[in-house]
Length: 292
Ligand code: GDP
Image (cartoon, rainbow, N blue to C red; front, side, top):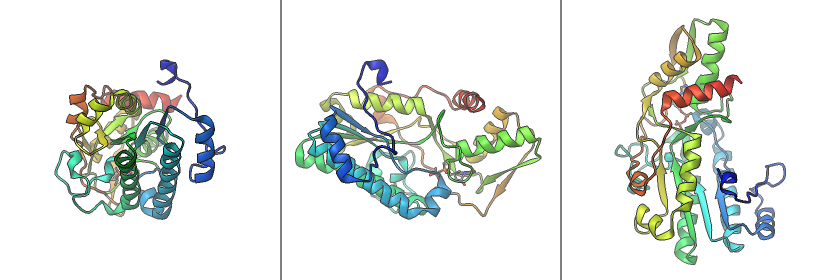
């Protein structure tokens, strides 16, 4: 999307620049002096990865954010966009979730370290704005999916994990597929192209418009579709898309996580943005990509 806008996009792969290395990140920032920074890099994963590597999810994300946000500020970068996650809101908060719910209750334990890192990143941006008058903004997207996703059988998020499992079951003519948990939790899914479009939309808003949109003293806004499905409904959709004709079995030994986290997307829609891709079409298109 940025290339289509005739932007000079500067990136570094992790083999070239370790974002946890504050000195290296500062050198990079000072040399490149970008006009804007988009921080989408993070240590991410699904419920099992979060639950089994809590140290890395807290440590790596704190280090990445601190290095990049501090280096951006020291190098005089005026505008920065930090990507967080909808898991920063309390486990049992009122649905749909409003921005005001932040820090009003305990977090979901399976991803608390990741959520705490993302809250710290948000607060780093908010504090830079307060103390230095920078224009650092944050978007908190719901669960993402789409081409280029991570399809690791254990560490990925639910949608790619089930796409892989149902695809293999359909190919092998299996009679049942295992789905983790009870199937009753609800999740909201946003296509990655919509997430990218939302990121640029937020970045391009003028400062006053953004501040009025997010509310006094805040710098974050939620990005999603505003509608969710149960994990069972998601599994049925993936069975349909992959042509799997067997049964479903739920595995109660795996965690359910938060029961529901549907986003109130009214702030984004008031600003003039809404998601385009429907879940069925988005999943079909992702499956076409997956097969190719
Ligand atoms: P979360 O939204 O942060 O909880 O992360 P996930 O994308 O990993 O979604 C987890 C939800 O999907 C939980 O309710 C899981 O029990 C359920 N789920 C069902 N099967 C799977 C699977 O194979 N992988 C993952 N990651 N989650 C699954």
